[in-house]
Image (cartoon, rainbow, N blue to C red; front, side):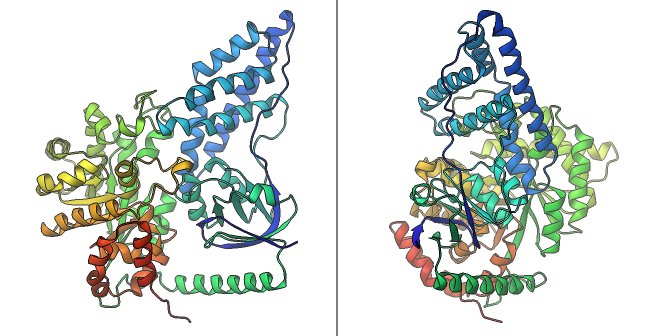
Length: 577
């Protein structure tokens, strides 16, 4: 019987397929004991299963490329670290040796112990890691019994589940899964970001889905509106086919924009840069006509192995990046890594009580100046091959900018003495993602050549809301009056000094928010390559003068509903073929 449900659209696109329902994960095993003489053999079996899972994760990590290498690889690295955690391993050994519990039940008890510790923490980041513990324990349990831990997708299916990890979504997409519906989740989570980069329809926060949908039900889902139809009727199928035709027409329109300028109706050029971290990203950015690379993440070089990459290894990566953009400006962000990211190199501190507020970004670089000097030398050497800018993350005030500037000046002089070819000067910019930097920008703007507003972290810190905490999905939003007013004030400072100001983060890659950003004074955006053409199309349908005239009304909005009404009133209308 037909039934309609609603969730929150997190990744655009439509899908028609059979439902594959995965119930919420729970490791339910009965209490079982082993004889004292069997304890060591049981422990050996458990250790073999753990080693098998480590090998599986290493193999998956080695197969990742492009966008998946960053988003999925980060979580796989975290799962590797969990498997090496002494707390986990020692606890399992004690439960088997001293408690004489079977391996399955020891896993269950240790999982519950660790979950209780994490649940009792004040920090939302650590509470959210319970899902990773469950994922790792589930893998080990599967290895004990020689069955597949990863959910296997079937072409033509739509997965319905409580939650899905980024490490699963890439595999499901490659297996032909058409779309995903989750009962929880947030449209700003890592999973949602990855789904959008893969163009995989995703609906989150659909609490009735698991109770209403059965295995094998036929579903129609719309990742734009969050609409779910169970056992669709003839009229639903007609609507679905019409939507597919519209999506095909839209893709055709977008392809025509690859070589078109990103210019508003009143003739203002808006520069669209691409975020990148791999050769594949750079190639896609080039093919789509990006103005350059607005954010090149260097962390992937440091997360690939246990050794810190030396100057030559970094130089080769940065040189190839510069050459790949054939004369277009490349912005390289210095290392942004901390305890919130899986780090096999040992650079970041382990077990920081609050990693989001800890030793990360420029703070880590300044604590290890040798590391920063090596990276600056490699970037400066790459500047001999084309235009390069340096972007410093997690800046909180003037002192950090001055320290990096002084080190960069010394590096350029040293390289000149060594006979290395570099640019005479390299532009230095700051990520404005910490509220203190945004507020104090007038005091150190003259020390910068450009800025990039990092909205993902700025929203998180300004609203005290973890974007990966599903319970805060409604609170974590760039559409908060405080966020818009702070961004506007930052842009005004930059414009007063004639300094370029770009914006990056998820808001930059969502064409629905393009009118808002232009109204606030933004004329440079940096985004993942996949939505670049959609944003270009939005720009070409907007009148910048009209938007700027309406900016005061936007800044007077008192709540998110008022901002959404403003957005609804200014959305561009795209011409049909």
